[in-house]
Length: 572
Image 1: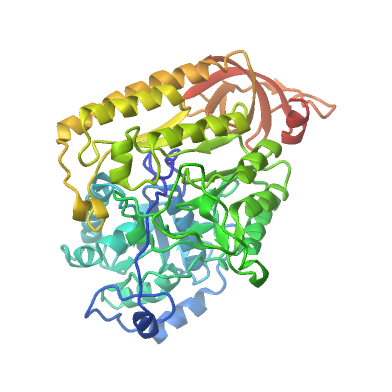
Image 2 (image 1 turned 90 degrees about the horizontal axis):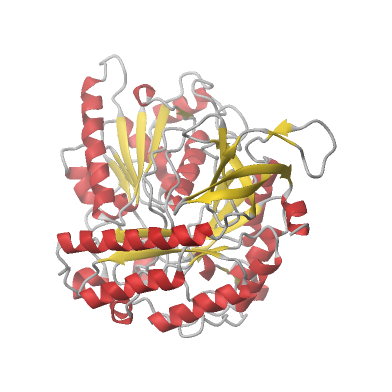
């Protein structure tokens, strides 16, 4: 699983905390079926035919709307294209879904839609959904009941409100979504966003419309996402989609399909564009981000596959050829020395020494790694099909800390997986204590249909036991994280300012290199590299902060000066 979302975002984007892209394997497609359904696609379900495409009225409406406002990099303000249908977007779950929302908005913007931040103004409401846990899906069903009431109250003078379900839940529950009380007009899976204009046109005629075909090659590489938080200091860049691991608990392989990577050239173009817009931190995203393999350049298609982390294995054969993650990371880090680079979510098996060395050498690649463990019990890890033992994982942790001094570590853990005993649970508790993570994402196990666990294992840990074990894991994590963060008290930390603190307008909030939140007073500060009058730090500025106190989740300190990423690295 990928690390979770930070907070409620602007533009009507709801992003509950504690979720992010996960890992899994892919659905398979026979050659005959590919020939029947087109390259890389499979049928959504037997006997289902897609409705007819848009009619003449749809194209006249789009033509009348003209080109939608400003350049593709900046979303138009609501009402900037008179008469254009207004779309309201809500995002649930992981960072990949936030990235998908930006792709969806880019597609709709080019097809004559306007964006609104007000639900009451919307002609179309699209929910970008998550299926990784039952609780995430239940939140969507509850939201649909609210939207059903909104539909019923809509004045007759206005066109009917159209509601769409996008993303992983659409892929997993397409028929149930379409038929349950007829709440939804449009269903689109993660690989069908290009088809949204047609699907919405079909919905305008009163029909339901769906496309949940999975693709073997769709990466949306040619679509520059429209940042949903204009003027933001950070951005997400999706570099690959899908996952070929087959972890027994994970639904992602069945909702997002096989691994495929974007061409490096398109990724570099997007990062360069973000740098030109003033973005100061980019996170490279993927379900298994460090298994990146760009096959677009012929001369690299016979390159040997890199080795796995020591003691790790996969359920699939090694894949030779392609430009790998280390090459991409090297190229991205060269674009802007004042832009921080992060990546998530990796699999622990894919950390060759060249990646660790690059992180250690480059001042703008954050010294922070996500190492999802899931469990501290070798027996449970085997049942999860994670491809490593507790001992191999700990060996990797020690190697990472030797290679990157001062590295900040985060992880994912599942409480109460199938067959987990009290001894297995206590081994996870001890792993949390031994590693002492700075950031953690911990959840009770939720059985998902289609997964290997659903077919082969029993969800036999009672709910109250799962809850108790999860509470103990969370308490242990917080205790150890508080100790890890306390070690930073008295040190100077470079903080990228994100904006005012939510709790006090007189304080600023940002994150250090280890991705830990830092809060400090908003004061007049001199710039370490510039002569002139002191000034207040703005979002996107780097500030050196001396840490005065720490908790399990937050550092507090006093600001010393404004500075630059390069200067701070040179003086370190």
